[in-house]
Length: 299
Image (cartoon, rainbow, N blue to C red; front, side):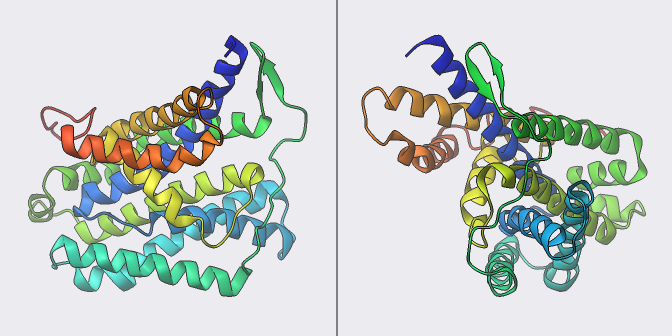
């Protein structure tokens, strides 16, 4: 394998890793505020693409209006999921709440199938034009959008956590939700905003990648597994670690395929297996994650 081919696999790994990072951020934000794994996160990803296509084709909105509209609409759906399905059982143990999120995931996928159909739906690229060439590797313009939006999301989250009252309240809930409530923080509002923010990040990933892959009502489960694996790989509850976990998982997948392609035909079919294998290895060998914090910080 020559250098250009290897670089192409690296580009693909960073592209996929950025998507996994955004989905993983949604997992870790909800987990940090509730200690619950939100398995509806994959459906938020699906809804981002689906609603983007709907806003563009059915409502006739310009692409650059349809995209943020889809993201904001999905954020509202995320808030409603918390309000209607999670909050009534807020005092339950984590396991029933996890099962509720699985049920919500199935409900959202079923609704999407009935509303938007079962066919794959396309979305045009955000920027038209030929791919760029770098070191012999082709980089699609939409990939640059994916990288840029991921960087922007990380910067926005950093500002949110360190410069806003909501962010400080979210960090307090990460440390101890009961103590935060006793200090006068409206923890119910924080949890609802955590779900909305997680949905927004999932939708951002979904609408950004749809021009490259198209979208369909049943894509949520696969990306949820990848995002959860990335969150566990980095360390659940740590947003920056989730980003690192997503990038590491994306590169691990892509480079593993690069190695397997030299010895195994159809090596791309092992892509999902690699993600699950990484998840199992981390759970067995380092369940706290590769980049978990060794000490808690003060909010």
